[in-house]
Image (tube, rainbow, N blue to C red; front, side):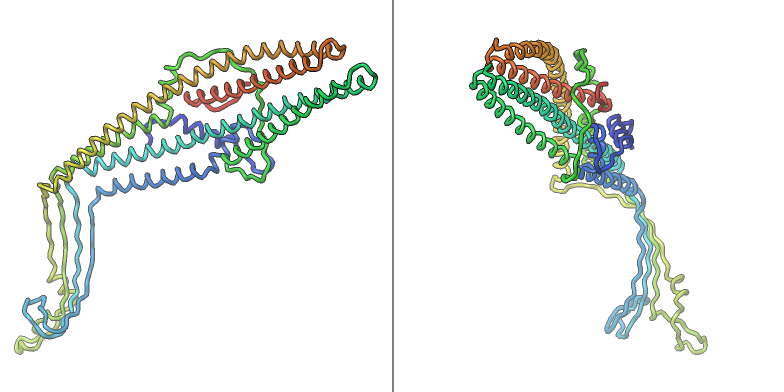
Amino acid sequence: MMPHANKILWILIILTSVFQVQVHGQKFTIEQCISYTLENNIAIINKDLEDQLNLEEFKQSKRNLLPVVDAGMSNNVLFGKSIDPTTNDFVSERLFSTNFYLGAEIDVFKGLTKKNNIEFNRIKLLISHEEVANGKIETTFAVMNAFYNVLYYRELLTITKEQVQISEKNLRKAQIMVKTGLKPATEILEMDAQMAGETYNQLQVENFLANAMLELKNIMFYPINQEIEVVSDLSFPISKKPLVNAMGIYEEALNIMPSTKIAAMNVEAQTKQLKMARGQLSPSIVLGGGYSTYYADSRKESIDEANPDILRTIAFNEQLNQNASQSIYLGIRLPIFRKWFRMSQIQQEKVRLQMSVNTKEDTDRQLYKQITSDIQALNGYLGEIEQLEKKCDAEKSAIDISQKKLERGIISIIEYYTAKNTLARTQSDLLKAKTLFKIKEQTIAIYTGNILSESK
């Protein structure tokens, strides 16, 4: 039914078909997380069911062009005073009759309302296709954010564990040196306090990671009581090439993103609604025909010419042939006045049409704003990553020197931990910038119809 291939929908179908997921003990890449979610998300399943309903509505609107055909029969038993259907005379005896009819009627012209209704339901069906795709994209965004949130806290946990391990190593060395009298006992207290703070940070990050994993399982509709391991890391090479062509990406997204296509098709659908409302002012022409016959036990005939009072009821089959009648008719209905109802409908549809036009313009504008914002953020994170990597390298060198100075007693433990904490903050900032960069990079990839994939 779709006029052209929906690239996004094909992307999601590819993800679903290529990356098949086993539930138990499975390691998940981001593509597999998305695939699993699209197969199990109830909201997506319901969107597919709504799509089936709209397909049936579209089929029925085409069937409405067919004639209406009715057939029926009735058996009547009359008691007491009644009208004889064969003579139209009043009689006081019991009468039995059977009636049959067959009729057909078709709308020859009805202001093109049926044709426009077919077009409206066709557009509605296309909109439902796009809504399915849009639901999948929104779910993809949600999974992507949850997935990278897990990665962020997992990498952050590695950093905090390294900090604790370094502090434990220094504490052991310091304890030996205090016993030998090379360091004062106060340094042990300083290190214990630092260790307690770093251990507390590690516990916090572990809790954040557990909550992030729980959120990812919830979005995926993955069993909460089963383990899941995400397969990826944030140490992949980051593209050094900034993006500047927001308009080019926007022009691609207009033909790809379901939200903009839905807004455009809503304008088209509302135009058909207006045409249907105007069609109600047109005359309607109906062509029909029918066939009817009946049997009555009061219909009799003489069986003896010499004695005409001797009668018999005419046979059932004979009566059906004798009493048969056919009809054909052409009817014209002119809408003259209905309390201004139809004109009110037309005015309402005009307003709704203008509202849909305004919605389309706003949807397109918001999409361009979002793309521009994402590109600015992407380039900003790229600059941050470059500077933070340089800063991190410099601070790693500085901490190595500080470690040696601490062991020789050249600097105090407070100076060492100041340098150590500075490096930890820089590593955390770099990790955050890389995570946000990857999210924005994948977001822009979706705008242009590219499959989510990690940089190799």
